[in-house]
Amino acid sequence: MRKHIISLITLALAFGFLMAEGPDFETLKELLNKAKGGDVEAQFQMAGYYAEGIGVEEDITEAMRWMREAAKGGHTEAQYIMGTSYSHDIEEAVQWFTKAGQSGHLEAQKYLGTYYAGSGNDADKAFQWFLMAAQQLDIESAYEVGNKYFYGLGTEEDHAVAFEYYSLAAAKDYVPALVAVGECYLDGEGVKQDANKAFKFFTKAAASNNASALYNLGYCYHTGQGTKTNFIRANAMYQLAVHFADDAQKAAFQKYVDDTAAELSIVHREEADKIRDEWLGR
Image (cartoon, rainbow, N blue to C red):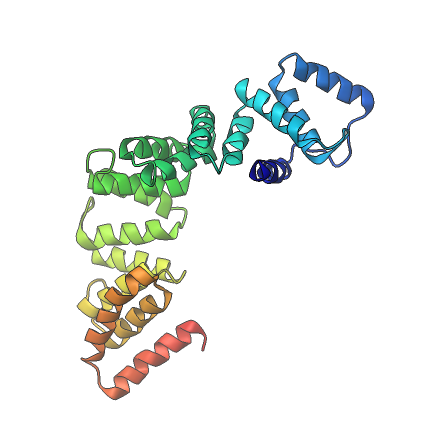
């Protein structure tokens, strides 16, 4: 119950339905009568007033009651807030998020996409919810839909469609999508192979210190794809990839550091280290 209360109050403030000053008595009386009559917007406002004690005595039980009434009546924001209030009860949370998501609530749709892609273990539902969110031009969801098409998760594998969704997110400079578009160009997956374009996308993404982008940039220098072969810069980029990588990536990237270092003289290794240090601002 404590988690319910904290969540509700936090969201009441976040969504801004509380007034800086409480309503006058007549306004509050009229609002309460509307709420009792089933007006979901009035119920939603009353929940906020009770949560913060604005115009009425603070009463979390009443706040929860009115929030639930608004949610049951179809108030989309109230349904979403009810979902967030049940972090201790995923099944209940999913039911409320589903109601909100079906009414077009973007954050609810994203939550459901993430839930079903993970512990909910339903690739089909994950795809559908991310697709709904992507149709609202959410860039993170567009990227997720791209992944679903690329790997055939919850839908048929289609690299061309995956590239389209990746491109939508990349156009808004979403870094994981920039990397994905670069990889599509590098490998000719879903689009005509173009190493020069791949290199440009990796360069742009690497500016955000994305480990995968730095690795791919190193790979381009290492193999001479999209740029001239340069083992010094390749080694430097690989080192940076290791620096910014999570634990799951470090070992794989370190192998490329070691492989390229073996091809360099001591002087050239020092040059690579200097490039690395300049990037890191050392």
